[in-house]
Length: 575
Image (cartoon, rainbow, N blue to C red; front, side):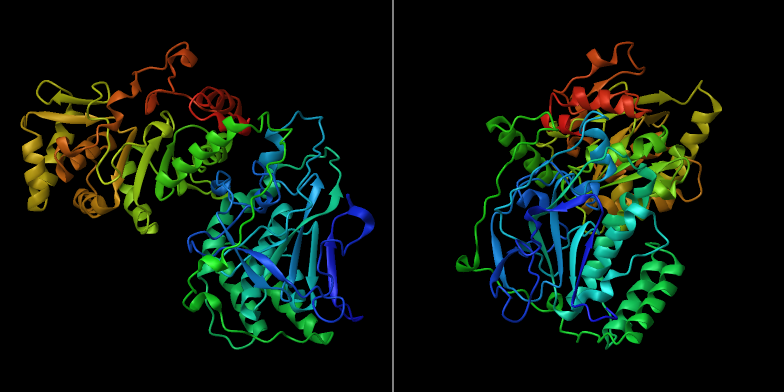
């Protein structure tokens, strides 16, 4: 920059430039005689809730995802129904695709091939470049990226996060600030061939990605600033990101020093432009819709034949995602989360809006929140409040396997629970039983006496025998959005009372609705008290859920995935 650079190519040392021509696909010139002066295909902004995309799908590889894509978005593998267009000239950050070893995360790298086999993946070099509209982001790396002068400020790499997260966090930070100057990111066909040296890097180097990246994207899309100069906005965003825990205070200091250095070498701040996000979006007319159907290139490392059967399976996955994509899954893990948390997110994150993991011990690195199983219900209200737009909340213990493909007919406006599974929901006589049951029953009576009238009426109509206590192991249950307020009210009525989870949940459900108004979706689940000696034969893909099951290691998870593939064959791509 000090010597007059107008563009900077950020590239790593393991790649060769295809055809030795950087301008074959990249727009090296944006103005003047060398500029292409063309319109560029752009992802549609029709769905405002779509805030991140996997660009590899556009370039023919729908089963591969880039480092920095939230794991919960990995399952979104359908191509765009249509695109729009944008005038070229402001693609200040240009992200190139890499053949050979593309930029993939360690989850993909370690699960898709034998250890000593090198990746050699090819993308469609004839697919058109594609732009990202404001409100939509894409992972941007430091392996194959051009920064034009209007985005030089975005070259700063944060220093307080893990090494394999630094460039991706920078990319999301820079994309958001790019909107302030009317710029956008464009993703280009393969421009380099990177060689897989089979030099694995530890998963721990990516921890800041998998834990925070989904939350970061949502934060950035919603962030607004009233500052009047770009550098002021940059500094403000860096400060707020530190406050939110996306990076540390040293990166705020680093940002300030970086901006001072830019000014010292004569760098001119780009002028701010009004944010399109804050203006009403124009309707996309029929004439504005541009069609492009990506190729489906062979995915040789995935053990999947690209035939019509796979198209059917993809359609199923899309259908499941549409059905449950606005339902939050809350998992309580009794097993070792350091071995299973990311695997659970990878499995269920393909289907649900997000996967929240509770455990007896908090793990910040893995975004595992602390909660005690005996009172798990008391932690749910804060999670309900966190996702106010969610359609409903599904609670699941890690000793129960969810066959989501068998839940499609369930009514998401009703409560779901195992009240018709006799081994899960039982009635225990208080007389002659232990003090524990007597104390639990007394506390239930106290709560029932303070319930609002509509809840008390339901409860007394449901529970006729006041000398017994309803017990439900509550391994799995669902609460729809419109009944969340009643659930929260009941938790507040319990307050500091020591009512156990397996007592509180049946009490809550009996008060919120009459049993005939529950959806009986779990009535046919496979349920036993103890783990059978041959758990593989015990599993069935024909039921909505299976209990009990034990997953305490990656090997257990792989075993589970292989048998669940009977209901969702695309799961075989995960192992």
